[in-house]
Structure formats: structure tokens, C-alpha cells
Image (cartoon, rainbow over all chains, first blue to last red; front, side, top):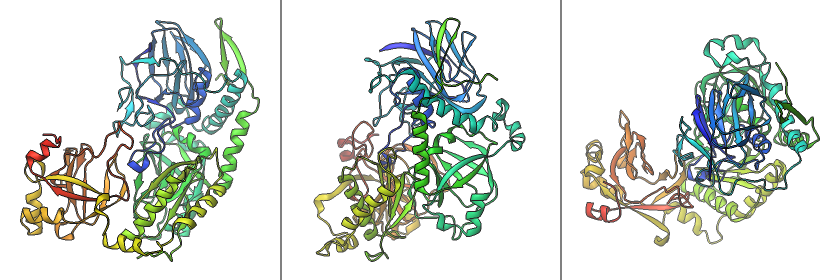
Length: 363
Length: 245
């Protein structure tokens, strides 16, 4: 165990997350875990960790921490300015911090959640096989009781430190994956977000920007809606309200018409389930969702687009694009192939320090 | 009422999960099909199966898309349903499910200290149902209850089988804290709070048993398909069994 970081300011919400605790839903426990799983994986790989090592999920930035030891680290997920003692380093790149230096992560330019991975990983007592923080259920996290990070918390690396299970991938292959992941997020959000759009006042102006396409598979209860209701779902745009957290995203927009009421016999809640309660507007269920629910689910978000949901902001407009389960699966496979292909691996030097950079765009 | 003539429906729940739906009502027979399918899936040791979640009338089977395609998963699940979702040769299964007659050794016994500080709403339930508190206790501890599913929070059992004579509406205003182990009534349902949480159920007693323990595997005492019986115990027994103040 080595103390490596002291949290100076956690920002609006910062929690420990890994890839979650699948397999416990039958006992009433949701999977939790990083909302942008690829974001966490890329940060870990850049920092030299296995992709599922615990990292810090930082919501809307404004996070500061002081290094207590020499440290390799990386951030991925949203795109936010990062500084070490006031000197900018690139997001989506490995960087190093000396003891006493402060790493500051500003408000994201696009996206919502960033993942800070530290070389060697983060030590915490797993609960049901995972350190993921589930605040509502008081499970996991830094104290095992579901607590979010707060100022003064000390982050430690485990003993022995986390090390890649597979042989260390050459930097190029790690960054090829990062390039693909970053390119997708940039394509989805650069024209949808401005730094100001996190504020309520910008919600109106967001309508000038483009709607984000979210691929979905219809069902399991699409037959609980009228033809007109299914048309509304697939053709109209919906705007994310401020009711957006790790449990789910509540939208507003035209009402989706139920065919026979908004109640079903409660059943299991799959990842990305799109529930339509009585008011007819969608709620997308995320990692901290309740395990069962009694509203009909018109569709579920395709696996390939689940990570994007982590970065939707209040005011963002989405449209749902239905495709078959098999086609959604092919899209996921294609993305995995793309991210395994040789990519534009960039190595740059800033002030004598070499950075491995996935892809960068200076604004 | 469902019967085995109703073939299960397979419904997509995204590209990495399938809902296997056995019918559209809440009944012990339907539940027995759900729980049998759940057991079969868990016992099949399928490396691609990531999550199996039984509920009243269906099973949600979630798979790992890195290991199997949706069409291949659907086919494999269909084969298991064909092999498993058939009436028992002897016909005992459906009788058991309908009458609740079952080997007592497989029943989970939940000791409950009724009334007093542990059941502050027992008097209200008695008043509402025009029964004496003793009659409420007798009716509550008589049936064999079926655990239809676990949900809402770690270890919370959705039970079937309560005598409708003791049905009582929820409190008009929820309590901010209901102690762990509290046994309550809400409308036609009865249940046990596994952990301290806010809640509006009418509390009639408390069990000294821990229904949820996150440090052990499995983390809860009950699972879908269990049958349980509440057994009245007095206060000294409650404390002797490790009950909290």
C-alpha cells in the first residue's frame, strides 16, 4: 500500500468505479461501475493498468488532487483541460506527476464524466467482487459503504500494484483503441456541447445544435405502445432534463402513446432500458438502476452506444435509431475491430516529458 | 391462468439480453416455471451468461457480447427452455405449486417478534381489519409464503400468499427510517425490510434474522422460489437470537 494522491477538491461528484458487479441483480443489487466503460479502460491502459482496474469517475470536472508520490496517470472519457501545477497537459494522454504537485481537471469542453487512472491502480475493499461506488445502496467505494470522494481522502495503490494481466501491449496498440474511442466521442459531442451548456441557462440555446443519434433495439415491451407511439419514439427528438444521474436519464418531448396503460407486472431491468412511464416521455436506465421495474420498456439502448449515455448533458437532444439485435451486435463488433487496428499513435514531448497521446485537437 | 400450453415468448432486451416470458399474470404455477428456468440456466454453467434475473412472470438472461452473438444466444436459450419448461411427469409439480404443499424441510423459517416496539402499527392493522392483534398475528404466521422475486433493494423479497383479511393500506406518510428486519403490510402484500430504509409499510413485527449480509456469498438469506413461514417468538427469544434493540 502506498499513498499516492490526496483529494483536494472532488468537484460536483467523484466516485471510485471499476467495470461493476455483474451477476448480483437477482439479489436486488445493480451492476454499477463506470458509466463510460471504454473511457475507464482507455485511461487504465494509458496508465499501464489492466483495463478493469478501479479509477476515479469525475463528474463535470472541477477536480483537484495533490500527488504524495511520483505517479503515472491518465485521463479519458470527457474532454477537459488538465493542468499539473498550472501547466497544461493533454487529455486522453499519459502524464506523470511529482510529489507535491497538484493535478487540476477543469470543466469539460464536451462530455460529462472523466476517468482518472493512476499507475498501479487504486486500493479499496471490494464488495461483491467490485469496488464500484453505489451511493443509494451504500455499497463499495472508498469506504466500502458507498461514499463519494471528499476533500482529504487519500488514494492508495494496492500491494502488490495492479499490473496488466496480458503482456503489456505496445503503446501503439493501446493508443489505437484510445483513438477509436476518442474519435467516436468527439464525433458525437463536439457539435452538441459547448463549455457553457452544463448550465441551465444554456439549455435553450442547445436546441440550435444537432441531435445525438442513439441506436436502440426495440423491446421487450414495444407491443405495449400504439403504432403512433412507436412512430413518435423513432422519429421525434427528445431533450434531456436536469434529472440525470448514475441511475437514469429523464427526457422531455412529445408523449409516446401507450396502447394499454403504463403498468406492467414488474420485471427485470436490462442495461440501457428505455422506460415510458404514464407521462409518455422516456427514461433511460443506467448502471445504478433499480433491478426491477413496472413501466413498459419500449426499447433498450444498443451496447455499442451505452458508453455515450455517460456524456449526455441536460439540454442535449437525442433521437433513437432502431435496429435489429443482430445488427446492433455487428455494429459493436465493427467498433471493436476498428479499435484493434493500427491507429494514429502520437507521442509528443511537453517540457521534456514524453506524452503518449491518443489523438488531440487543439482548440 | 397460465398453463404449459402457453409457449414462452422470447423478447429482445437490447443486443445482449433476452426476456423469457412465461405468461402475463402472477401465479404460483407461473412462478414455478420461472424458478425452474432460473435454476436450469444457473446450473448450465454457460460462460457467456452474465446475469440471470427472475421476476414474477419472466427471466431476464443477459449475455456477454464478446462471447456470443444475439442469434446464437437466442437459439441456446430456446434449447434450454424446450428441455426444461415441461410439466413434471408425475404432475406433482403443478399440484405443489398450486396448493403450496411442500416438504417442510425446504421452507425457510423467519422468527418474528410481533407487536410492541417492533410492531408499532399492529394496533392499526387490527383496528382496520376489525380483528384482535392476536388474530392478525395468527393469520400472518399461518400461510406458507412464496418468494416471487428479490428486488427494490438488496435482499428485499416480493412475497405472495398473504391472507387478504389482514390487508391494510400503507401509511399516509412514510417513516424516514424503518429498522432492518421490520415485517410490514402494504395493501395486499407483506414483506421484510432487509436493511434500514425509508418506508411506508405498516410495521407489525421484527425478525432477528439478517436477511442481507453484503460480506457473504450469497449476500441474502432468501432467493426467488423459496417458501417461507413466519413464526411468532417472544421478546427474550428475539434478543437471544441476536435481534437488535
